[in-house]
Length: 462
Image (cartoon, rainbow, N blue to C red; front, top):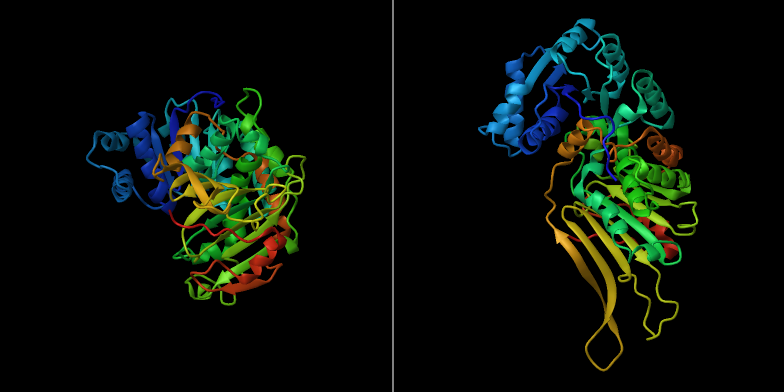
């Protein structure tokens, strides 16, 4: 199903080369691409830091070493030989004249904007004026706007200089092996498809929990919050993978077409569908405004307006300072129409569980008879597979795909719009923010969302 869109890029330019994202993600990804996939193109860093090439190379060495890479290896030496650097203000045309010179004979460059969205317009414009955007690809980082309108404004800016097929919007969660595994398991095994609908599914729950706070990201987080930072993108993408229809045909856009269709059928959230929370002590984090009403926890009840999912409630939640750091999805199946053995309905069985992190687990919940004369049972889980969480780093996979024009794991303009449409009505301080204790599963008020459908299924470490 995966197909390339227009051949491989012959140069990689990354703006924001001296920044935090470059240090934490881009340099390790580039090292992996050189080591594992023999990336051999020029790699040009651009930033306004007053640096030279030697300082960029030192930054690359510090980054790769900090992330477990061997800086004495031939692969790292090759990476250093490919590095170039252009320093200056993004508003200065001379910077882009120099960039065009550094690109040399490159005919299909990839430009990665690891910079704040406020700078996208200036950089895209300068790339176009200098000739650097011709036949080029563009990679941009989330957030793709702060709401539906700003996301649309951003898309219009990018569309002015690049075609949609050449714009790659990174959501690193899509590059994770376990997220791809959801799609593969669903559509590579015919046993599941007959059950994957409203006739057999009782409800769906998705949890993304972290056992730590916002740490040193207070200023950023206080402008974003859990809904913008995680729910609107990562969690809705997982939901799409769980509930989309099978992709059809061999067109390279088949998977994204199905995801877009699914997300467009999700009913927009109302105020009664959301519970927001904030852990005690959040306001003391440096960078957080006194009296902040930004949520560090969000739970939502969703519905999909389609024949397949009509009437199936979907519950998603994410939060910081929860008991464990775990992400998983649970599809709960309906109980048998008659309790043959007269037992009380159990919510602990009859499910399929996809663990996304820290390990990769697929499990089936079932009920089995307890040994003895009586016809009574216990809830057990059959572990179909359990694998370590380590795999190819998401940024390495995504950068490699972007270089090769493979867009399956990137979000498309209409998908981004559909995601914002779902959450747009509940952004900001429009619902109460309930306090919760660090180490708990969030505010008690979140229990009202599941109500008659049972309870939240709290993930447990393996």
